[in-house]
Amino acid sequence: MNTSRGRKFSGSEQGVALVVTLLFTGIVLMIIVMTSATLVTGARSGGAEERRAYLALLAAESGLNTVMVRVNRRLTTTPYTGSTQTDLQTWLGGLNGDPEAALFPATLTFTPNSADTFTVESRGSAAGAVKIALQDFTLKPVYLSTGMRLRAALTSLPRINANGNATITGQSNRGQITTLAGTGVSAALGSSAVTVTVTDASGLTRGDYVQIPAGTAGQRFRVDGVSGTQLSLTSVPGPLATALVATAATGVDLILNAAAQTTTSVTDPLTQRVSNAADFMPGEVVTVGGFKATVTAISSSGGSPDGSPDGLVLDWQAGQPATITEGTEITRDLSAMRSANAIEVKDTTNAVGSFTMDGSNDCQIVDKKLVNCEGAADPLLANGSALEADKFFTQQLLGMTDAQLNELVPLSYPDASGNFPPMVNAIRRIRAQDFDALLKNSTSSGLLIVDGDINSNVNGNTTFDGFIYFRGNQGGKFNGNLTVNGAIAVRGGPIEGITTDDVVTDITGSLKINFSAVKLRQLLMNTRGGLTLNDTQGTWRQR
Image (cartoon, rainbow, N blue to C red; front, side, top):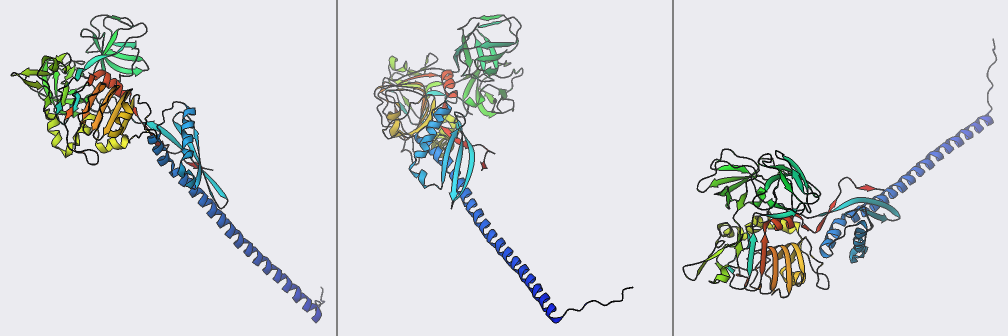
């Protein structure tokens, strides 16, 4: 057992220990203070860097937010008409030349991915920090809604003065749309499904009805599919009753409107499925199987390929057919001219013979010098013209409101030299004062909307293939050499901000209108408007 006691420190030794303890405590406190100071300084520095990075990202995002406005504005002043990735790169390059480009807080780089898609890289900076935001965009063409609603070669809400040398001829409801190609067609008795190749299928769509060969004695088919120039057809109303043999170059007729189902019990009224029901409007008169009926409504069964209306409600005027077989033509009542008011034509044989539809005169001399024209005081125009300051007219012609049309088709302006790019299968809206600059002494095609009252003699050789819609007055100036292979509509006025009160529609010059419902439908199906820009959802990213 160790019974010795522990050693006691002297006073001097105890003092040294206290000093050492205090030194260690001071060192620890200094470390704590220095660490805290370092953490605070780092936090402040990190916060500043985060703020700079955030401001740089805001600048980059702000740059992306300018793309829609800048590109859409350039589309109205310098339309993009290219078809390759290189074309798009060249066109996009013009955006960097905008005077205001230097005012934006970000630098934009445009990289095309195809002929109509591109990526925008927006590089933003703030106090030395740099952030990059990216977004993909797509240019999409404007197409009008389906429907060949026109019921005349010349439609005018104001009265029409046709006391001149104008001529209007037309073909309604059906006509040759294309020809057979390759080996033609050879289908045996009893066949139903037939596949043919044609020279041009651009005017055909699923649900149409065609006849081979063209004319009155051909076999009718329903178009079940269109792939390139190949058509998948089904014989209607049943299998072929005789063999069909037709060589290449044989004509193919399109029947614009036909019964899309067989109705074995015809009632009054009757809801009948038809092809291209969007062509019709309530109130117009049609002929089915030799019997006339008034269209009282457009209906939808949900069975059309694209979900569009596919039926008519028919109110028979005097009698009705016992049955309606699939493929039976639904004949619309089209005329050379229609007006909400009077139509004035000279009381001469030559004059009344200048306005025909399907080979028949639309105007007749009655009671000596009195001339009656079929489309005068048209009830669908006269009744509608009293409603909402004629706003119905655009809806009746194009299936949309004025506001929708304005949004879909922005105004196009001439360049600094006063010129427009060529108009080929295009949809354009121009000011009335630019009418000559766009069309005069040229051949153009598509759909042209003219806002305002034109003041043009249209002198020179000018041809337009398609449809011209004057949202204003024609003004009695069609006394030049203008040929329209299609149709014209004149709304008159007043239209707030666009035009004045109605002025008579004068066609006293050498205007020529050659109307073909089938050809016009084909042209409008292949007409596209200017491009609009759309951002591609889900493609925003940063780096």
